[in-house]
Image 1 (tube, rainbow, N blue to C red):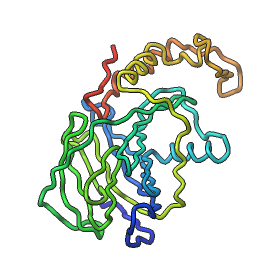
Image 2: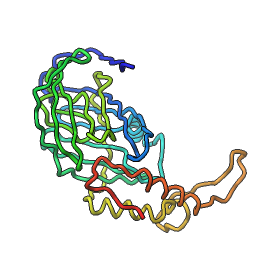
Image 3: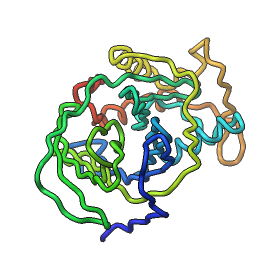
Length: 270
């Protein structure tokens, strides 16, 4: 079925510094490359001036709620990759974010896609688009972009082409991003506050530490944890959670759903 493409008042894009737009991408990915299961999720790329933030609709809602009221719509005790990225279009700096509960971490992406422009073009959703290829994260990516929107941006870490990326996928078919909506925004990015900078080595240690005890922040073993949870069943009766079972279930999921965008930074869970 052809995807419905909605455009709200697209004007000539002038200077990047004056742009305040929100681009919605449909992301389809396989958490396990050996299975046919595909997860579909709407992701939002907010661009304001020379900065952008790419995240899920839920993450944007959480960030907005936290900045506006100090409250958060959803708290996750899991440590997981949410494909959350921010870019500075002036300096070229790109950061990947990882969150767990109230802790936020950011990793500088020092590997950038080197694009090869191809001669193939076609018209799609009212735009003339051109094909391009690049390598990133030990994957080969094919992208389509349009110079009719002269913004060198795109989903996740992808940017740097002579126009907006409207579609991009990897050769293995594990990841596919498609632009489905464009609209003007209020220019508010609701960026995460004071995240801790880490490198890829620290990123790996962070995930391995979490894997060793996924319920560490809620099972009472972590003396530094300030989280208190009242465990009750659907009838409101207090129960004692089986943390061992919870750990084993989470560890199994981490082993089986281990298909990151950056294969060169894939963690081996044993």
